[in-house]
Length: 375
Image 1 (tube, one colour):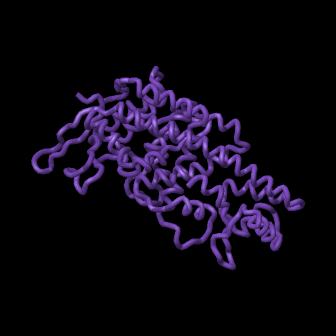
Image 2 (tube, rainbow, N blue to C red; image 1 turned 90 degrees about the vertical axis):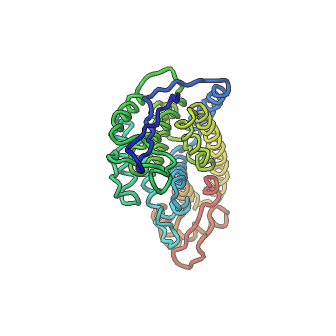
C-alpha cells in the first residue's frame, strides 16, 4: 500500500493509461534518527540564515540578487537557456544581441515572487493567490497559450511523447478541486509536524497534482519560499533552494517520483531537508563574503576625498545593479559628463569596476567581484 496515493486506470484498449491520484494530506511520516538529525541540522541553518537580517546593513540588496539567482536556476531546471548575466543585462537595459530570448521567463519569475510575497503580507495563502502567481509567471512568454492563471480542465502528463510513454501522469482533471481544496486546508492546518516536513509534503503534493498545463515546477518551488515566510520561519525571503535542485536535478525528479511509485515519502523528505540545510549554509557563507567585500570597497571609496560621497552613492547602487553604463552613473549620482566618466575611471583603477564591452560608446562596467559571489 502506498501512503501517497493510487494509480487508477483511465480509458480502455490501446489508449488506456494509468493516472496517479494522491491521497489527501497529511501522510503518516516515520521520523527515524537520520530524518531527525537532518531536521535539527536544517533548523540550525535556517536560524543562522534568519539572523542575517540583524547583520546586513541593507538586507534588501542581498535579497535583490538572490531572487534573480533563484529565478534563473528554477527556470533552468525546466530547460530555460537564459543565464544570470542575461537577467542582469536585461534589467539594466543594456543592449546585447546575445541576451537569450528566454530571459523574459526569468523576469516573470522575479515578478511572481515579488507579487506573491507582497500579497502574503495582506492575505492568507490561498488557491486564488496560487492562480494569480501562475498568471504572472506565464504572461507574454512561452506557455501563455496554456491558460495562465487557470487550473487545467484536461489531462496532462510529464515526460514522454505520448501519455502512454509518459514518465508520470497526474490525476485526471475532475479530481483536481478536491485535491487542491485539501492542499489549501493543509497550508493552514495547525499540526505538530515540523514546518520543514510540512513544506516538503506541500511541494511534493503540488507537483503530484500538477494543476496547471504549464509552469507547475516553477510555481511549486515558489511555494517553498512563500510557505516558510508565511510561517515566519524566515522573516525575509532568504532561502532559495533551486540551486540544489538544479545541481541534483535527476535525483530531484527521481525522489519526487518515488513518492508515488515506491512509497518513498521519507527518502524525498530527507533529500529536501538536506537541500534546505545546504542551501541555507551556503547563503550564510555568501553573506559573510558580501560583508567582507563591502567593507573592503567602502574603504577604497573613502580615499577618494571629495569624490567619496558620490562614490559611496555609486557603490551602494552597484549592490542592486552590478552592471552599469555611464548614463546610469549620471542618473544615480547626479554627476554630469565628464565627471561621471572620471568617477567610473577611479572605480576601475581601484579594482571595483571592470569594463566588459571594449566599445568606445555605451560601455558597460561590471562589479565583477560581487556578481561572482552569486555564480
